[in-house]
Image 1: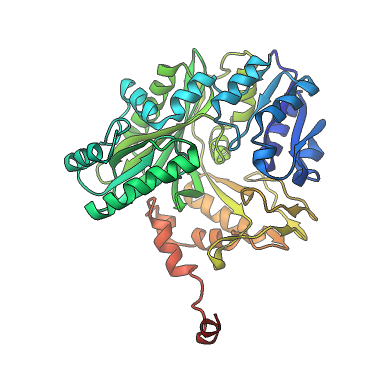
Image 2: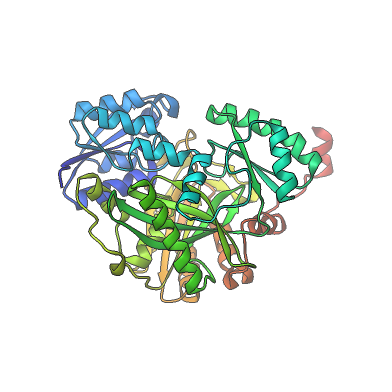
Length: 463
């Protein structure tokens, strides 16, 4: 491998995760950090750490010039972007390569192609991957969009062409809703992504969200089976598991092979995820998008396959061919991941930074805890609220859920509210245990169990 050192262009638990994978390969690690993360675990673990700016992400973790300057000063061979921030920024990937370093991920051209949802859809169709009925590309204006809706019928989704992470999506159930939301969606997309382009597609009722992990070295491509990500709040994933619940062997094979076909069609290099909507009633699946980076939920795939996906990314970036063939990858048991956030589920998931006064983590061979926490750590208010990921494994899904319930009961994070109570309730729910859920399930479930208490008349009058 022609990499000896790597700069970690991220923070939090994923920075810690990359550090440990790189150190396991004997690489020197360099951690960039903002002023808010000076005392972070990622900084403590790295061989070298370089401050790149103030707390605001746009002046630190999103500042391409600042990150590149740190990489050049540290004389690293490669840059790993993690997820979020600059991970899917094609200009950043190009700039890293132009500066003479390896970008741990696909080429900028692939990020650019697959990052545009319309272009990605066209590429998926070319590769023979099923896509949701819709515009098939950006619509020029609302009149063109209306003609498409006439053809496919309601409900429909209005999507930002440059969106991601569940953002920039609106659902319209009738003409009034569609005509009201279309210009709003365009304005919001322009503000959020710098691109007001929209496309329209059929909304699949009670769809499940299933995704396939892929690896490629530009010439060889494999899948690492699929993950279930249907338990979502406001289109943000809350709980993930692998393999997906209730897929037949035939559907699983078609799903995974379609992801490999798409990877092959673009000559993909690195780790990526092809996301789908799955219609359980018809057993049809439809392409959504490709995430050209490591995913938050990658540990569940590692738990069922025994692979280290981050190490594979580093090896591929270092010029090595894929170390595994498809025949080498098999599923063993079941894994579930719970995202532990600094949010109060009893107060409408309000983010809650503060100091972790005590931390107790269950330890066992079938339990994994990816985190940035330590006792005394002050969770800053400037970034995403994800603190950790509790991941468990079992021979069956039922055994996995039993282990999860024990692990959640033993996990203690004191000093700030977290989403542990949410996951305890989900792990005890009969519908979750039976796999009876879809992408809209959690919203209704939360309303009945975690709705904030009604305000008292006295307090209302005082307002």
